[in-house]
Length: 134
Image (tube, rainbow, N blue to C red; front, side):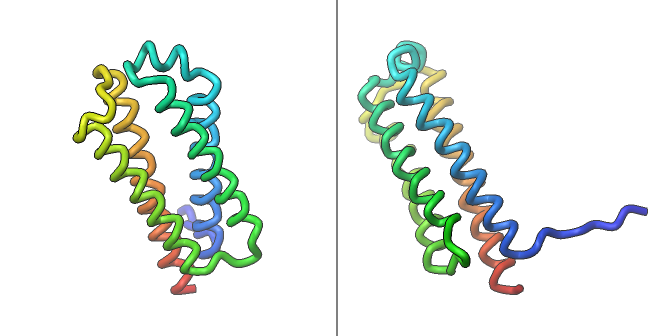
């Protein structure tokens, strides 16, 4: 019989924030380094991709700064969750409002990013709850 072990409360939150940083950084670098080819494949203007890439680089810096804190307080976690929810809303809004008109692959790209961010936001919420329960 295996014994299940749980990471300490703060470790779940830190691990999820680290995963958010890694994925956001990778996506940002991809969008900055390959905006031209991605633009052709996704039918999303390269300027939009570069802009999103720079936003993701700033987000990466913020998340790394957060991880450098000895303790990550609830207000900071709520800020992270709020920004993630804003990213999801913005992703949907640019599609619904027609700010971008991607092809099917581009639509999948935007929605997949939003879905991944939603998972991070949810896990960050659960990590915060676990941290608060001790």
